[in-house]
Image (cartoon, rainbow, N blue to C red; front, side, top):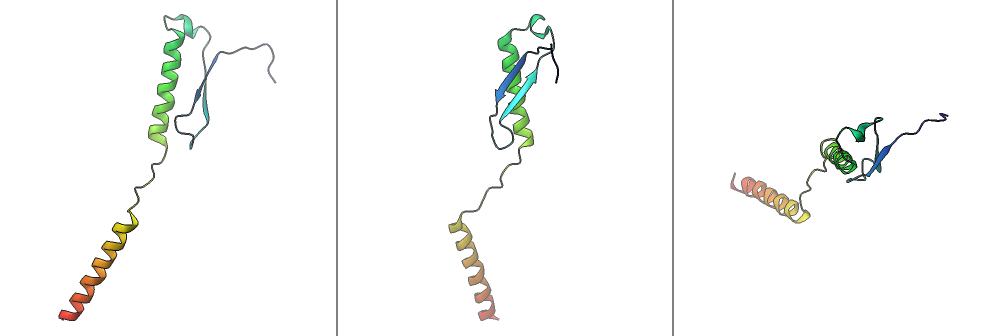
Length: 87
């Protein structure tokens, strides 16, 4: 337990809750006084959270529709039957 220390933080809700719920950015002392506004700090934190989820969340593979899978399976079986019948 730490006593007597106060920190400024930015809490950003996750753009994709599959990976994390919130991102917490702990600001350095005096970081807002270096010509950077509070709004710019929040915007940068949101950009970082979004870019992290864009590159670190595994993408779901696109699924083939059941109709397309059934039709392609039927065509393959039909082609095999036709090949066997001709030979």
